[in-house]
Length: 175
Image (cartoon, rainbow, N blue to C red; front, side, top):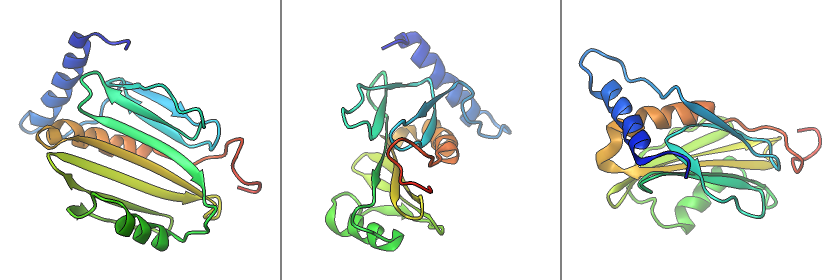
């Protein structure tokens, strides 16, 4: 991994300083890197605190992990071959996968939804966006230790705001 431990600690200390300084608004990191998925075209901007893990051979996404391994970003997309609607996909996740029993944040929009809550001593945040006329499902998942919420909350907000679907080599025509 490219950063030294001291650089990673300095990044966390900087984030903590912004979060914990009295009278100071929480600020998102300014050292953002950009990942664009060639296969599906979505983009993700993430702070240098995270480093890319080896990509999957499928080319459908990317995982990013902090040097200490305590926080992780996973992002990917897939063709909606089962013709899910946003609502049926959400219901399928909740019914068929573990870890959604302690949700505390669940906003929805016309083409997206978020599921966020607790899994043991960790917070998870997952945003699902449908694009290309509901033919592509784009996913952003972030997890981190609950006790580090003040550090990661502004980071999650920045990443979520910047996560955008796009056009890639495998997106349907007329996307």
